[in-house]
Image (cartoon, rainbow over all chains, first blue to last red; front, side):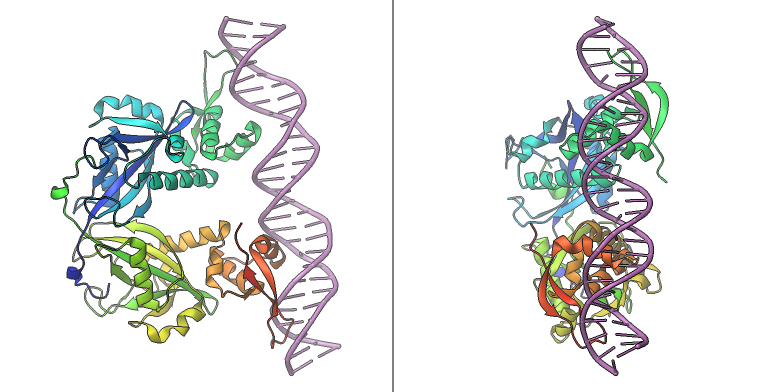
Length: 220
Length: 220
DNA sequence: CAAATAGTGTCTTTGAGACACTATCGT
DNA sequence: ACGATAGTGTCTCAAAGACACTATTTG
């Protein structure tokens, strides 16, 4: 970058691709759109937006999330930047992927406000190629899936997939889905104890013992 | 990305910024260049290259590393993509940062082949602002430093900072520098045991017990 | 009271941490 | 023999894993 005459280097389009994960019916789901144009017409794809010349990457991600879900102020983080030359057959696009996590109730609530139709599909169906995605999007999903499983173990990222008030069985289920294995509840409770704060509310109406509701404890 | 008419979105320059770390004199060092043009003339900066229109991000990183160090086939990984609007006062540049790790002997050996002069500076001097970097490069270094400390704990990334054959005291020193704390050698040896393979060579000439040389074991 | 799920107590196992000891070189 | 660094044995302590037990609701 010593020589800043970039005239010999062509500029390129930069896009943000969004991976919005949620948990529905005990499965990890991803928000995708159905392409109505070529290429890959009719295929599912990750929603994305181009980054404006005066727009930060994070801003573009926020805008994209708003367009696709009607939501703002939900958790997201940058994942990885994909820059293969022929990712898109029409032109060179650098794609910065972002991962967002949201409790499924928030998605449903805002359904009417969405700009265009989006669908939730089972992430395992993508991984197993039962459902095929356009472009190199499967690779991006695989990477996000891996990162998610990783971060569950050493961060409190899973909390973004449950409501503000949640029961421990609910939270445990999220951990189990992301980790792909069952956990012992006694051990699970010990593990998350430092991250949660009990409320005085309980579930009710179920034909079994009520479950206490918790909130996420303020991080130290 | 449903609507691919990106004409309203201006294209932008994409660059790869390189963070080449090594360990010299028991300190973590970063390879930087001295800027000979405005802005930030005379300041240290991360070396970088623009990404060509037909060039992959990884390819651009490989090319940049070759230009700066004369080396190819060294370990590197993508770090994070910085896209603040005014990172560079002259134009909008999206910067994809890459981190490379190399044993210091390899850098010295190839010194003559370098395209332009580069320097190794102490990373802690950057963190403490004793040495100031151009642009937003300090932020990038901080992030890389954090990632490095993190990955030492759960990957074998530290092995890229020692020679192919290494002693355990050497390797332990690398861990200690990256973690910023001293380790007990007995415990350290237990920890790395699954990742190493003993050779029949030993150090010699020192006024103390020789140290066995090891190589990295093939990952399972 | 039976079925169902919530929640607790505690033993075992594993790994990190701490520390003292032995080993082998050059001088 | 001494100084210096390499390398090992083992105790302690804390976290993870496994499992059995108790608790509270509806029907």
